[in-house]
Structures are given as structure tokens and as C-alpha cells.
Image (cartoon, rainbow, N blue to C red; front, side, top):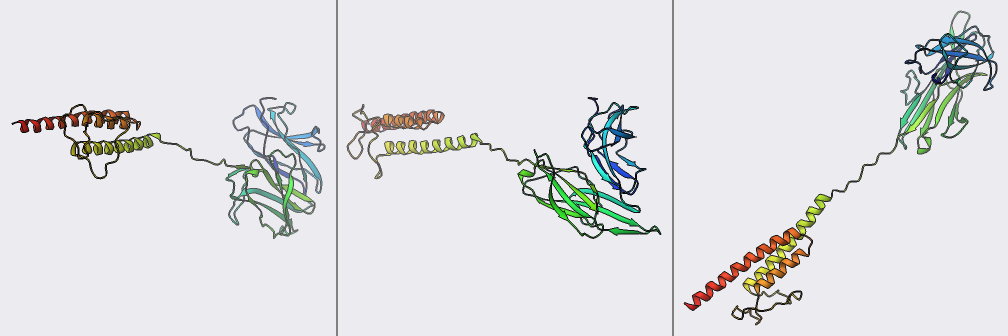
Length: 342
């Protein structure tokens, strides 16, 4: 049935001499018309025939199968089934094999739980998300008990074997084992996570003699590394550049204006070769070195140099300022000549 979802998380949580208790992920909570069907199979073959079914409605996530024989091995699988039918089913889960306990013995398992507090009741984490380089502790616990004739209980110490299957791998491989732990003591698997752990799956097999149960499977997801975006704010950089250029241009303009209006200084260098001076008025005052000073040509050349800095706007302002300074100088010269005449 294409509309029937696959049932995930199918595990056996408890077993005694005559029953097995199963649990699974609740994938039918919002799916009407379907129920959960737990089937007992003839063998471990992928196409094994189901001998019998037990049905749980779509609000359940566990089921106890009783009426079994002690010390006997059974195989089970689960699928979504159409209400009122066991011939119309969805995809069947993987087969799990469970052996019942001897008379008077019980076993329960829980976990894996991620980074659980010491001594706490272990839940089940079907998946965990961690960052590469972090440390992960997976814990599982099994309780094996022997019931006495007087209904007393004796705790027995199980063994723990951890299995791992990496992304792209087809089989689980043993990665760690604990034995001879005190009864009711949790087994821990310590993992220093790397990028290779992304998509890895882990579970723990809890055993006593030749009987054992598997915990659920935990999927590890490695968080993607977050890198802050690199943003270059061009506006402040451009503003600072233009300000520096404008400051340099203004200084150059003022230096040239002062030199051309107040006369040469001791630090004045060679003439500006870019635009040679051409005296046009023989009556203008000469500098101390005998060369005639054409203020208009000099200040205009200064504005041109400013334009070459790349800041056209400042060059226009400087040109206007230079023109104004030239008019002031001419006015002063005419005033002096007029006073000399009178």
C-alpha cells in the first residue's frame, strides 16, 4: 500500500520466560485507516512468511506478545496494515530475533540516552545533534532479575556490547564491550565526535548468558559549521579615501596660494614643470629671485593637480576658491598701484 508509511524504531524492550514486549515510533498518529501489525515470522529470511499477527490501533506505540515458550527463539517484524486486514500492509520493518528467558527470569533494557545524568532513568534518544569536536556519551542500562519461589528478586549483572554503523556502511560493527558490571549499572560509550560521525548509528546489545535484547538505534547528526559572512563596507573606505585626498589637495592648494601671494619661502622647491609660467603683465611685482609670479596660472595649475587625485567634486570647489583668491590678489595690486599713482 503506497499510502502506508514504514514503521520505524521497532525494538524489544522486555522479555521473560513467556512474553516479549515491543515498542516503536508512532508514525500513524495522524493517519486514519491504518493500524500497527506485529507479525511472528517463520525464519530470518527477508521474504519469510508471517505465522500470526497481533494488531495495535494507531494510538499505540507498544505491544506485549505473550503465550511463548521459555528458552525459545522467535522472530518478529512490524508493518502498517489496513484496518480490518492483514493482507494489505505497508513496508515491513527489519526482522528482530528474541529468545525468551528461562523460567523465573526477566530482562528489560532502556537507552541509548545521550549525556544522561548519573543514576537517572534512561530514556531513548532516536537521534542527537552535536558539533564536531564535542564529546558524546551514550548510555544504556539493562535490568536482569531472578525471581525466587517467595517472589523475591535477585539482580544479575548483564554484559553490554556497543555497535556502530557509519554513513554508507551496510553492517553494524562492534565498537566497545563492557562485562561484569554490577546489576543495574549503566554501560557508557564515550565518543569524541568528528565530521566522520555524521550519519553514524549506534545501539547496545544487553545480554545475559545466551539471552539478550537490543536497545533502540541512535542516529548522530553533526552540526554544520557556521561561518560569519564577510561583508566589505565600501562606503566608509571610499569616504576616508576621498577625505584624505581632499585634505591633501586642500593643503597643496593653500601652500601654493600662500607662496604665490606672500612670496617665496626658504623651503620652496623648483618650479612646477607641468604648466610653465608665462608672464603676461610686465608691471606685476617680481619675487626676490627675479622671476615674475603669475598667480592666476599658478593657482589654476593647483586646481588641476587636485582634479588628478580622483575627487572631481573637490577639484571644482578648489578651482572656484582659486578664482576667488586671484580676484582678491588683483584687487590688492590695483589698490597699491593706485595709491602709488596718487
